[in-house]
Structures are given as structure tokens and as C-alpha cells.
Image 1 (cartoon, rainbow, N blue to C red):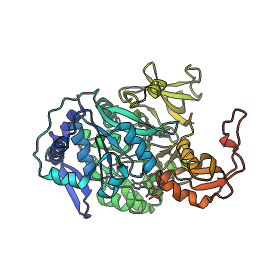
Image 2 (cartoon, rainbow, N blue to C red):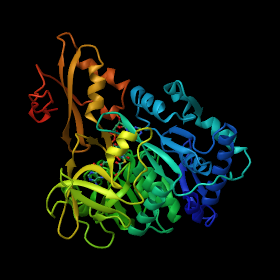
Image 3 (spheres, protein in one colour):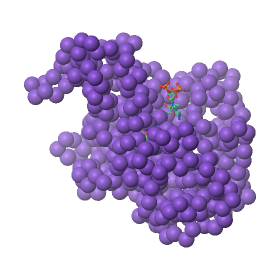
Image 4 (cartoon, rainbow, N blue to C red):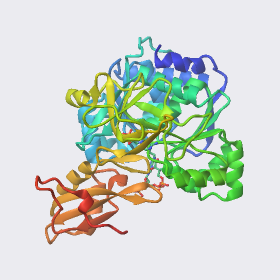
Length: 490
Ligand code: MLC
Ligand code: AMP
């Protein structure tokens, strides 16, 4: 089965059913049926084929959430092409690396951003939409199956260089089928989509669950915390997927409004970063709902989830997903006992094929068919898994990943910065924020560093604090001992 055959249960099987609501560029709310989505993506596929896109080609997009992302996703799958999502917050360094690695035929983006993709064909999304509006409605005849790559999703590696996880049609199918089953999603659900569609939480979970179940989706351009309550009240969703920062923001909702939102809701799901137990508890008190926390990765889609029916245990990520096996191993590769911390390894049809162009990274990540997540965890005797950090020094801020090494490299490329060490510091809203410790020339102006970085890397990666130190604490072998850096206060 290809992903498209799964979608056809909705696209062709529920043609006249309302599928999607979104705001167009003029701020008008528009509605589409599943049949409309099928026809729109057929037309867009014809336009893309006319521009030379064929099976196996990579086509990137760098767009905020809008209907064009949905049309593109389905159209590119219909062509057997490989979708490369690019975070809209990415800047020069990040974009340059993805383009050089994925070698996309084109990047679909807004007119104002085409210049950011120098060296690659930039296709203006509005131009594509206008052409598609008058194209013929015919589905291309391209054969795809579970092994066909569907997307190349970049995720930062421990080396600081982002790697493209090759996610197949089969990976997305396995993830969609397990989530729809495990979380009881049906065509009666109403899903409020506020997560960015350029990451797997929004794309691999949100969009897939929607199309596989045939439920209704309200697409928001992005999560804006001052407007979020209004959307919940207006749309009355039954289903919401969010990162912990969104739940922290939602706690500001007045109690009576929160209760009313909770009364219409069936399921709140959290993931992509740890949900603090106190947020879990405060949310239950305010909204009358126990958030269901789950654990996934770009490379594996969803691995572990608290149950829909049964105990959703705060501070844990629950039990392995229906098709996923989980083992926890020590440094020597031996299974650890219950209650003992080790590295989480996973296996299942959800796990990606490997990293694009990176045989070494791929063989380092896979051992005997098991994928090493790099996450540390522990299993309770009743099977519930608790995550306890990572083997690497990944920082997660608002659900976006930050590898210190990438920021350190960007910092040391700036004039006057001799050495840099970046660490994550706890933040009540974003979970963590990055802070930089620097050894610099006397003339180096710390206050200018943030602006200089902003042109190179995404704003969420720009350190919130810059601290000058005489030297970085190092081991005898020269490795920076980040835990010996002085504390930082905002
Ligand atoms: C955030 N910003 C955005 C944006 N999201 N800008 C454009 N589009 C978006 N989608 C920018 C803002 O402009 C601002 O920039 C900064 O981020 C913070 O914005 P805010 O309005 O203060 O937001 P806040 O209330 O803090 O919430 C941030 C957030 C965002 C939660 C909306 O962090 C977010 O969308 N996170 C989701 C990330 C995600 O999907 N991760 C999944 C990865 S997959 P400035 O310049 O002021 O800093 C994965 C696997 C798995 O991890 O298990 O799911
Ligand atoms: P990404 O590379 O963006 O896909 O991020 C994946 C990482 O996010 C995982 O390896 C985990 O470290 C982290 N993560 C995802 N879900 C959770 C969760 N529920 N609790 C803690 N960490 C999580």
C-alpha cells in the first residue's frame, strides 16, 4: 500500500465530506472537501510535472502553514517525489546546508524569500497556485509502495550538521495507522492544527492522522498564544496536538473558559519535548483533561505513548506504540534491568531508512535492525517508560531542537570570538533556552553578537545570554566541561 491509497479512503471515499478550514491570504475563512483536496493536488501535480518534477526528485518547501503545503504534500506524493520541509525560521547557514545536501530540484516558497535560496530554483508559491487553478484535473500514474521515500526531514546531528532522515511511505503509513488506532481518532474528530507543518509533529502526526481518519482539520498559520483561546472557542476542536510550550501558554486561560474548552475536547496530546509534571497537573485542574504524553523523533516518528484508555502517568511517555519494540541498553550493549537508566533503542515499521548521503551516520545509528535514539530512559516494572535526558547535549526550546555545536561554530566564525560553549538553561515557558559562554578579544562587543547571528541561524537558536569568561573549563584532554561553567541569570 502506498500512502496515497491510505489517503484515498478519505480523498476518494469521502469526497463530499468537509475536510479542511483555513484562512486565505485576505483573511477569509475557506472550506474544502476531501474531493476538493484530491482535485487540487491532481492539478498541482500536473503543474509540477510540467516543470520537470519526476519520481525520486527532491522538492523542498519553506512556507508557513497554509493550504499550499497540504496541496504540495499530496501532489508530490502523487508524483513519487520526495518532500523536503524547511523550517521557516531557518537562515543562511541552515538553508545552505540543506540545499547542498538534498539537491532539490526547486524550493517552493513565498516571493519575499526566494533570494534566500540562491543557487536553487525558487518557485513562488502563488505562481504555482495560479497555474494549478487552471491545470487539468488528472492524477499522474506513478507507482509507489511502502519502500518509496516520501520525505527527507532534516534533524540536527550531534556533530552540529543536520542530517536528512529518509522517511518512506511505509513509515508514514505505520505511524498514521498506529496513532489513529491507539488514540481512537475517527472521522467525527475535529483537529486544531497549530503545529508547524515543516516538522514531523505537525506533518507526520497531524496531517497523517487527519487524512487517514477522514476527520476535520482547522489549519492555523501558527500557534499564537494570545489568540489560541479564541480559536479553541470558535472551532471547538475534539483533538489537539501540541508541544509543552503551548500547554504552558494555555494555562493562562481563565478557569471558566478553560472548562468550556475542555468540555468540547476529546484528547490533548503533548510531545517533542518533556512535559513537566506540574504543567500536566495544572492543566488537568484547569481544563479537566489529562494530557496524553507521547515520545517520538524525526527519524522514527512515534515510538512510545501513554494510553488512551488507562493510566496517563505524568512524567512518563507511556508504553511502546502498537508496532514498535523498545529496548533499553547500557553502554556495553547489555539490556538493563527495570528501573535502571540506559539508552533507548527502537525497532518497527515507523523507523526511517537511514540518513540521506550519510552511510557512516546511518551505520552508526542502526545496530542489527535496531535504531539507537540517543535518548536515555528507564522502564518501570509495569512497562511505563520515563525519559531522562540524552546522550548528547541537545537543547529543546519550544519544541525546536538546538545543537550547541552548531551555534558554537557560528559564534567562533564571528570576528573577535575565540572560543564558545553553548548550554541549555531552564526556562519556564520554552523548557530550555540557549546561553553562550565566550572567550573573546578585548574589543569584541558582546551586544552585537545576537544581531550578527540572526542573519545566519534561526532566531530560536540565538543565545538569550552571552557571558564573557577568561577561559572555558576543560578536561586534561581538552574537552569543555560545560557543567563547570558559572551559572547564568537573565
Ligand atoms: C515560533 N516562531 C515562529 C513560529 N514559531 N515564527 C514563524 N512561524 C512559526 N511557526 C518564532 C516567533 O516569531 C518568535 O521569534 C519566537 O519563535 C517565539 O514566538 P512566541 O510567539 O513567543 O511563541 P511561544 O508562545 O513561545 O511559542 C513558540 C511555539 C513554537 C511553541 C509556537 O516554539 C513552536 O511552534 N514549536 C513547535 C516546534 C515543533 O513542531 N517541534 C516538533 C519537532 S518534531 P523571536 O525572533 O521573537 O525569537 C519532534 C519529534 C516529536 O520533535 O516527538 O514530535
Ligand atoms: P527531533 O529531532 O526534532 O525529532 O526531536 C526528537 C527528540 O525530541 C527526541 O529524541 C527526544 O529527545 C525529544 N522528545 C520527543 N518527545 C519527547 C517527550 N515526550 N519527552 C521528552 N523528550 C521528547
